[in-house]
Length: 246
Image: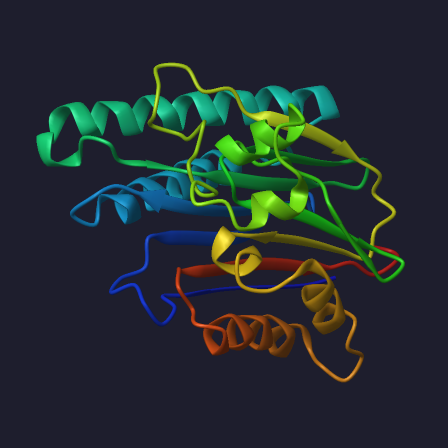
């Protein structure tokens, strides 16, 4: 089992509002998290770092997440707690009005793999060399696609493609979507939209499948590819390569 995460400001933004981490507890359970913050006066980075710190602290306090149902409840409670904290911070700091963050998380234990997401940061699994997207974006254009009002191709170039319908800190209640995934996968990838907006899933897949590259080189190469194409946003990636007998 190998893991690596990296975040990069990109070539256009002046500062990085993303936060990312991978943690392992005493039970060899893995928590992977990527958050993409939003809000003026650099408050996006405050929101994303608050989310990462809070969920990381909750994970480090317990020896095991427990059963799958325990894990689902734990993710729901974590999201609610973070949402409340961001709203309280914004209320106490008037210049922070509108701050918020996306959240995508993966929990891997010996018995199960679950993903959770709020917003448009993405979770994928690599299975038999093929990259599969697990999470669903909470964006306006994705709602339009699901309603049949836009095609997938039209959505890629829609002027409002980045308009979020859900984010931590955006409303009093913010429910996290949970996805139960087969553990028979070769890799788990989480990323902010700074990756998926710049290069295709097929291009990501090709880099992850390159047998000549170590995990650190794969993630660095993906970020270089984004920057070579303009690097219009912050780019954050968390990747876990899974070997048998974990």
